[in-house]
Length: 201
Ligand code: GTP
Ligand code: MG
Image (cartoon, rainbow, N blue to C red):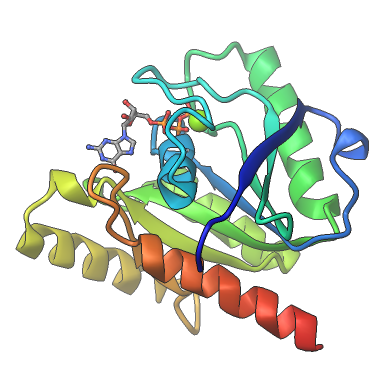
């Protein structure tokens, strides 16, 4: 897919104030600092479109972007960030849950996983919850540039084996790096294929 345009639309915590649910939407979620905002900038090749930071907890709102005037891309706050106060964390969780459960045009959630880490309970619990709720998702292993080829391969296959403990069929997954653009074509082609299928149906 060629990216002709990528525009920021709005930020909020209220699903009723999100843009009209009339275009296919793809959202990016995962632990704080996993690289959601960086991946979005890499996909649309616009540095600084989504705000990034070395410190976790940067993205705190639901941020909508419009790509090629055709589909929405959504940057979400991270989960599992201990430094946000418990009250703030509960509010976070509530509006993110509402968004995931109620956003009718959400066609796929990309769940980002840091490729360097062993499977974390918080991510596994989150994906199992998505499964229970019937939310379509795929996985993206981020920061692939931080590992050597063999270690990356081993970590990803160990993670996907772990997924088979919970799932009869493992989800689609991608390997990405915002540094060297690994995974860009695969993820964009995946989105394009879904968009085309939706147009035909
Ligand atoms: P929150 O908004 O806080 O939840 O974080 P986020 O998931 O949006 O992460 P963000 O994109 O802000 O990136 C966090 C840090 O990881 C930044 O310092 C990025 O430069 C770095 N980072 C993100 N992606 C990559 C990557 O693919 N490779 C490397 N080496 N660093 C990355
Ligand atoms: Mg972010």
